[in-house]
Image (cartoon, rainbow, N blue to C red; front, side, top):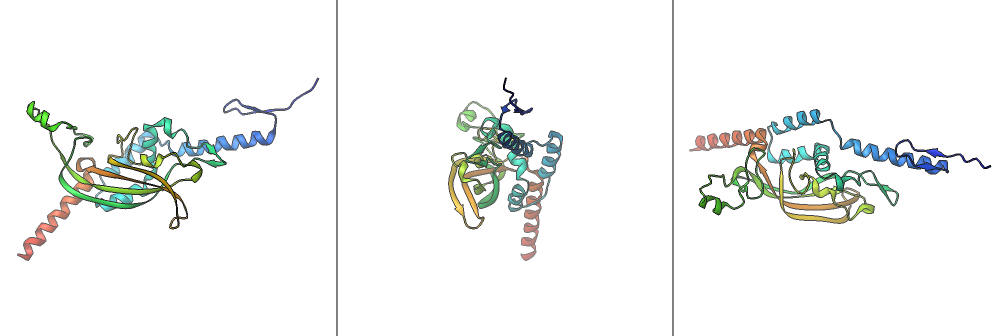
Length: 242
C-alpha cells in the first residue's frame, strides 16, 4: 500500500501533494489578507476620523490634499459599497496581486464657490434631492433647488498594474456603490475614464479619470467656516480701500 504525504490549508481546506505549491498558496492567501485588512478599518475609529475631517478649516485646495493624504478612508468606503467589484483586491493575475488603487495626484481640480449648487441628482447628507424642480413647484412642494457649495471639474490618476487593466476601481474614489457617495461626501457627475498609460513622472502605469464634481458646504462645515471668514476679511479690506 502506498502512503502519500500531503499538506492542507486550514484557511480554505485545499489539499496539496507538492509542498512548494502549498507554500505558494499560503503566500497568496497572506497577500489577500493584507490587502483586505487595509480596507477594513474599525467603524468607531472611522467615524472619529471622518468627523475630524468634516470640521477641519481649510481651503478647497487643501481639501484636495486631504483626500490624497487620507485616501485609504475613501477607498475603504468605496469597497464597502461595492463588495462584488472590490473582491478582486488581493487576487493574482499573471503573477501580479491586484492592489488597492493608489491616488497619485489630481491632474485638474477646477472648483468654484456657488451659492446654489444643483441638487437635481445629489444633495448634502442632511438635504433632499429635487430632480423635477418645475413639477415640484407646480405641485406646491417647497423643496430647495440648490445648496451652497463648490462645483466644477476634477481629474485624477491612480497607479494601477497593467496586468489588471480592464478593471477600474480607481473611478470609485468618491463613490459608494454605483456613484452614491458615502462618508466621502463628494459627488461625481458626468465623466469617466480608465485609459491605461505609462507615467514617466510617477514611473508606473496609471489610469485616468475625470468627472463633473460637487461638494456641498453643509457636508464640510469646517471648510465652509473657513470660506466665510475669508469672504469677511476680503469685504473688510475692500472697505478700508474706499
